[in-house]
Image (cartoon, rainbow, N blue to C red; front, side, top):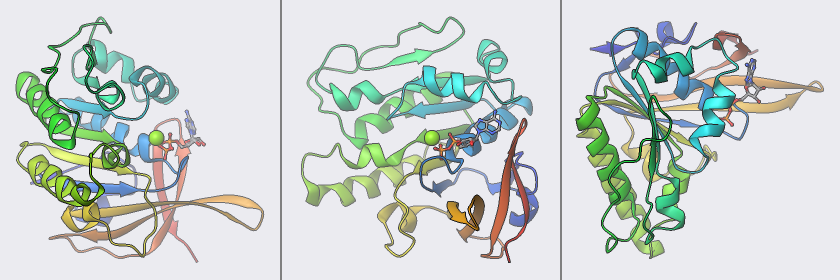
Length: 248
Ligand SMILES: Nc1ncnc2c1ncn2[C@@H]1O[C@H](COP(=O)(O)OP(=O)(O)O)[C@@H](O)[C@H]1O
Ligand SMILES: [Mg+2]
């Protein structure tokens, strides 16, 4: 089944939407629109009865909620209605051995969930376990993870990094959710573990052209889906991202 992203001009490019229960990678430099895309995917889902979870690994949920509230996407209303949740797993990575491992923004913005056992080191596996618990508890259907780049640097041994990341991606596929993984790693020429393991890869571009900032989206890979690989211009409106015509 196809899951509409709700992003104007985008679903039509991928045969109606993302395939259910798969993991997608959205890659791009800062300011290119990843957080916006990930949020729109969740707010759209929430309005059609699919609960959404936004996992923050590198920034505070408060900042993201505040930024995304500038769009007319009803972020705070959906949070209050418990249709959209923000889960902060950032501190797990920074103070992994500490007591207060994460906090959850719910209706009251201050509900704390169970801390993870102190003996366990922070790792992609811990992050996955926390996400899985939350997904099961709240019957989440859509997940955005912001960003996988933060998880990359938590493994104790560099050699273990790719292996752990591969396992993380495989675990995500078992969540029973449609997942959008955001990433700042943007070199389209190095094929990362995330790119191999994802069912689809979308690039967000942000570059100077003729003295003005040009923004575009490009579908690099989308398994089981007919699509082109062209760059398409995007613009940000009050409703979030909108995909426009092909770039010349
Ligand atoms: N309410 C808004 N209306 C229009 N454009 C916005 C609004 N909020 C943010 N933007 C634009 O969206 C851009 C990127 O947002 P974001 O999704 O946070 O990118 P990323 O997560 O890739 O860093 C900002 O640089 C800004 O130009
Ligand atoms: Mg962002």
